[in-house]
Picture 1 (cartoon, rainbow, N blue to C red):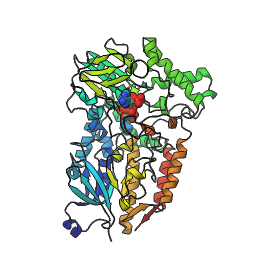
Picture 2 (cartoon, helix red, strand yellow):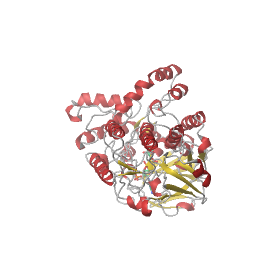
Picture 3 (cartoon, rainbow, N blue to C red):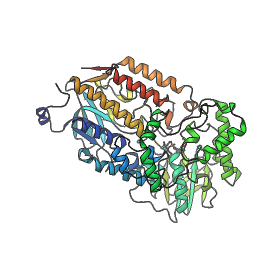
Picture 4 (cartoon, protein in one colour):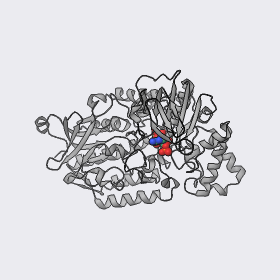
Length: 545
Ligand code: NA7
């Protein structure tokens, strides 16, 4: 007996595959590659017109990795690692998209992909032991296995501000940016939001625009990216060390090259502490966030100390002291929301053509008008608006699809009080459905997390093929236990108490005001061991038939 469909079965229903993958981003592309390698027939549905996911959609000026490029691509193919030259330490979006297209070409991935294909529903058919996937054009496709590769930041959200659609000029969300560059030359531009996206976009837009007005609700902490070009010699040296680099990442808590310093902040003499922070602040990448003292993200006093250090940096970089104070977060400590890495963000506020509006204290937004933004004090007129207002993180992309499992169970309902999964990969009541980068999985270095997740899940499918199983479910007690582990792991973290997309808060979405635990915040190396042991045990936490 084989889990793949017989030729006769396939003939009976032309649009039936062994597996359907939703999404052709980094997850979907790699899952397709692996499943195809195992001989399965696969169909990928992708909403966009090409591959790339996040890097297909987010084409706004300034969009780039803030993780080291040479740790943030695929590592599964030695050949690919040797063929691809990263041009910058933190790859700009166009280069990253080019890379993903190169991967799609190299492995001939597009022949199993259907673009402009938005999945509206995925329903489990118990009798047929299959999933039926319905696209927005009403067409249906069936498969034994369903893989979600829908990303954690793909459900973008517009600001819930009255009159939003009345603005007469062009208005863009960074995640739906036009495919041809937007020319801001000579334009009056308004941007709402100061998250990671806006912090990348603002310096670039300010360079072009006649005037840029930034509407800030809550400031975010940010630290310098220190991007640089990669010379051919440097790239050759990176290529020679790839094995070592990825072996190192696999052992760190977040699968990045950075790992925290075991010392506790206040145990270190002040001068030494300052020198360490100065060094981290001057270095490229996330070191200042995840390579800092071990208690920085769990101890309030330690966190207050690093926050004071970063606040002083902002004061040094912004000429107007009152403006600097506006840019310093007071409602959360450094690192308790995802830390954007910036290139000249704070200096941008020293420009004559940039104005910051504090919408919490000084000028609350009343509404958007045909001409621009009306605040409690005045109407600001714009030629172009940018809504850098973020995403309904992690579960948002799941909520947008009508996922129905056994007895019609709706995923949205099953997860009403927060997601419940085993390893972030399977949910109770949803047989034969596997989530790449689902809620409650380990994340950190996302492409590394994806490769790990795809590896585990294709191992599970291989186990089914070898044993002739066609049906897999998790055990409910395993879901309870994993959910408990995830919630416990989040408890000590200061970030768990701070509203952000990472804690599932989005004030533009009804019902998303309450903090939830959306990711596994334990140690990545521990997660890797847990999944390896699960595989070695013959996937004993799963029920097969
Ligand atoms: P974020 O980090 O969620 O930022 C969204 C920003 O938009 C944030 O400053 C919000 O302010 C602001 N916002 C959202 N809605 C409104 C309304 N209605 N009025 C005013 N301001 C608003 O999203 P990003 O896209 O920047 O980054 C997402 C992730 O992408 C990032 O962490 C990286 O991992 C990559 P608030 O803080 O809610 O007051």
